[in-house]
Length: 175
Image (cartoon, rainbow, N blue to C red):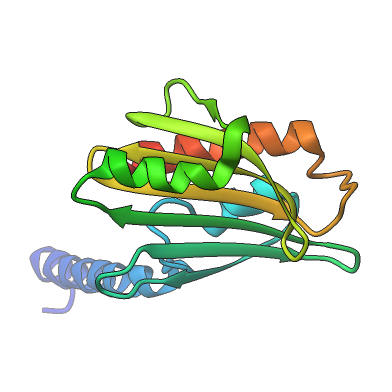
């Protein structure tokens, strides 16, 4: 009976199905991400910041969701921060947030429904770039900054291009 080909096929089929279920149930646990930011992952943020970064997500009901990615080295702290909120009048909220840019805000084309970019300088956060934009009823703010005044990785040109890439990514994920 053990040499019965039909019986061997049934046992093999059951074993294969059991193995498939074990694999399917185990993969989500292994592949689970370290951070739950819906708009940007740690790998992308690490590339934008110029080194391995650690992400943190703050999602409180009724408040904007904030994803913060930090890359710390011996000489600098680089931060990428994404804030997303839903607003009843998204354009009006965008105007309020854009006031923080002052008069040097420039319009960004092809980012969401509308977006502005500006230079920021904060004694505590350092030098950086900020994008404020909206996609439908969602308003987002992206800030990339470095504590170094002269940063070889996040120099002025790199900040501008990297904040634009981050804005493309976030706005694309908000659509």
